[in-house]
Each structure stands twice: as C-alpha cells, then as structure tokens.
Image (cartoon, rainbow, N blue to C red):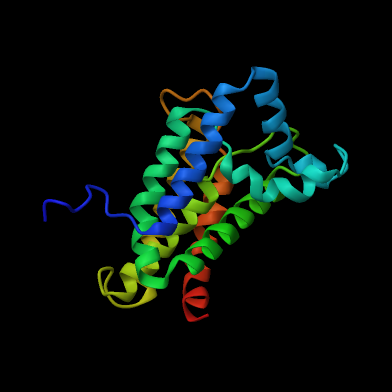
Length: 204
C-alpha cells in the first residue's frame, strides 16, 4: 500500500519512544549543571537504600525515572531500536497496557538486581536497558508460544545462557564508542523478569 508507514509501530510503543526522545532532548539542551542534577536525581543509586546516601524523594522516584534518562546518542539509539523491535510484537500480542506493565516491572527488577549486586555504589545508573531486556525475554516466550523456538521450555535454556554471558561480557569489556560502564546486572535482571512474567501478565 502506498500510504502504509515505513515503521508500522503500535501506539504504545510510539508513545514510549517519543517520551524517551523528549526527555533525552531536554537533557541535551539544558545547561550541563542542570543535566547533571537531573541524572543525579533520576538515576538509580543503590547507596540511597543502604545508608551511603540520604533516603530522599529521589529514592522513591528514581526506580522509574532512571528508565527515561540516557547517557548519549548510542545509548538511547540502541534502546529505542530494541523497544521498536521487541515492543511492537509484544504489544500486538498482549496489548498496550500489559506492555507498559511488563516494561515497568522489568525496569524495576533490573534496577533491584543492580542494587543487589552493587549495594553501596554511588554512581547513578540510567537507561531503559532493563525494560527493553525484559521485552527481549518476553519475545522469546512469545516465539516459543508460536512454535518458532521448538517444543518445550528446555530449548530456551541455551538462548538464556548466551544472553546472560553476552550481557556480562559487555558489562566488563564495554561497547565501542561508549565510554560509560554498562550495567550488565540490569540487563540480566530485566531479561529474566520478562522471561518469567510474560505468561502471568498475558493471562491478566
């Protein structure tokens, strides 16, 4: 069809992508000191919960706010690409509200996993990586449900192991063109959350 859009994304995925881009653009145009304050407030800092830093308003909000903050064009570009690739299929399968719930829970579990491994870390962790990793776990379950991964959950085990290993390796080695450390724990926690909670959320 000549009028069909190039990216046929469902509405919730579009809104999420637009929100991520809008927040990123704001952080780019404000003065550096303001942008730094936004990251310090909205970034997930484990030390807030273990006594190293004050337990303030940011401690309540940052488990969600950190998902909307990104450290550079590569960071947000990769997360939006994954959101488009995996989120579109998930939304079409279970709907926009359940997609949002899955993203939120995966992001939260990713942050909690990061905090469990590094409880005294005072560096803010930002990005939607935990949420989109959860979507990757969910899309694997969806593919298995549709027969694309073969029969039986045991066939998923090699893919799960490979994803965890890749996340750990990139966490310690880094990604070319990105000097910021990668929170591999967030990727793993979010991924496992999406893998395990896709079916229960689907049945809601």
